[in-house]
Image (cartoon, rainbow, N blue to C red; front, side, top):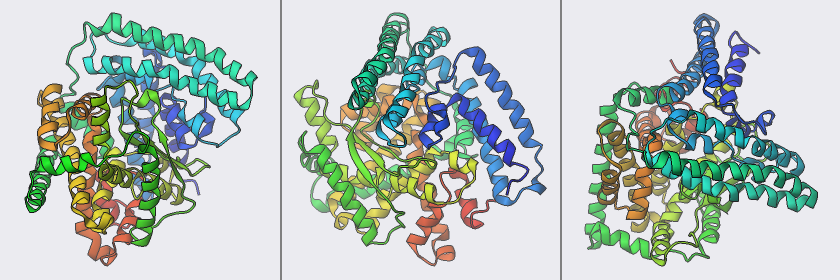
Amino acid sequence: MPDSLSSLEKDIVDHYFVLRPSQASGLGLHEYDGLLPNLSKSETSRWSATARELLDRLKSVPDAKLDPLRRFDRILLDLLLEGALFDLEQSKDLDRNPMAYLFVPDLTNYLIRDYAPVEVRIASAQRILAGVPALLQNAKDRLERVLPRPFVSLAIQIASGLPAHFAEAEDLAAQHSTALRDEVRSATEPANRAVVTFAEWLKAERLAGANDDFALGKERFQRLLWVREGLTTSVEEVLRRGRSDLKRNQDRLVEIARREGVSPEQLFARLNEDHPTEKELLPLAQHLTDEVKEFIRHEDLVSVPEPAICNVRETPEWARGLWTAAMSPPGPFEKPVDGIYWVTAVDPSWKPSEKEGWLRTLNRSMLKNTTVHEVWPGHYLQALHLRKTEQSLARKVWFSYSFCEGWAHYCEQAALEAGFDGRSTRAEATQLRDALLRDSRLIVSISMHTQDMSVEQATRFLQTEAHVEEIHAKREAIRGTYNPEYFCYTLGKLSILDARAKYLQPRFGGSVKAFHDSVLSFGTPPIGFLDGLLSSAGHPS
């Protein structure tokens, strides 16, 4: 039954998606298909003014008229708008980061999900393509004269991959008819010219004058913790916990290596040497996806809503520089339930040493652990629970990086505790290696954004403290410049472990499955509210 918040809730969510229509479409709200936002300064200023009016209306809704969960929803709606205002006015993504524009014309959802006939999805993709020239003109009009160098360099790389991504729409259309392919091509050609011109403009007008001023600073970083994760914990305390977890994991790694009679580096070298070939990589990932699903079912680690279907695909060219592996889960409003597990294969243009380095990074043990994180019981399973559980509109659209990535990272440890891969030395060493990487991400994120750590220093830190090979360490360090929220893995995992230690026996009688199902029943709210949700049976105080 509608309450005093219902109408305003919809108004706020609708307004939020004015800036992020592709996010809404990815959730399964297909009335937003084919829409691109107007990201000109004048339009986003108008958006901000309306957002503040909505915030004032939200504050006027009296607590007495809301039950506890709806009071929580009001907090989520407040943070939804405050977070978007933070991006516009404090981190200034649209003024400082050209990647913010290049992430917008993403056709992936139209290409990979059969939620509608091909011609309907292609029509939406055509509308996106048609809007690309205006989108990138807004970028040129708005971006500051001096930009952070990592943002410019990576934007040039992403732009160079977009034509190949747009061509995927032509390929899909060609499977339907030659006429449809020709229609798509008529929209693709100007879109391609626009991204090529934009990349050339970045090289000519922004690259030479770029600098290393990417840091948020302490005050904005502290604000980021609140608007994204509902946390008032100080930046210093978050950093302290990250360093403490890093030492704990390093000490355990040294203990295991000593038991094996080798150094940690030699232990990892053994793991790295056992890697798939180029041709074996994707089939192995699919095999592991099926294998891990059976493991969590057999161990009764967590409920698995059915149907549950996940397929492995090669990472699209435009995204190769962004991730090693990633999950594209079905949104809470989406009809198809299938998940897409992206795995980045070897780039044919790489030197032999680079190819070998990449395959060593994706060795068999690492790919197992990554599959636990991305698919079972990590991201994909979490998405299935969100679809199954009754949630308000606010809770369905809210996405917390720390709750989502923290859950997936926690699953790596939980699977090992349950006997995954026979609790082998290689399994624990790999889990620790990933934990060291996530600890290091938290540390370099805070250090780069609040303590003047450089990209080069972050790269060395990742190499020495997390045993990451140079090619991967540099990618990780650069990621921290534009994605400071990759602190979320360790932050979220530690929050879930704290909650498990506190509530497993008194609330769940020691049942890990019951604890996991309860955590997943909340969706992905800000991690700062997890304790309150568990302590009050889903009704945060």
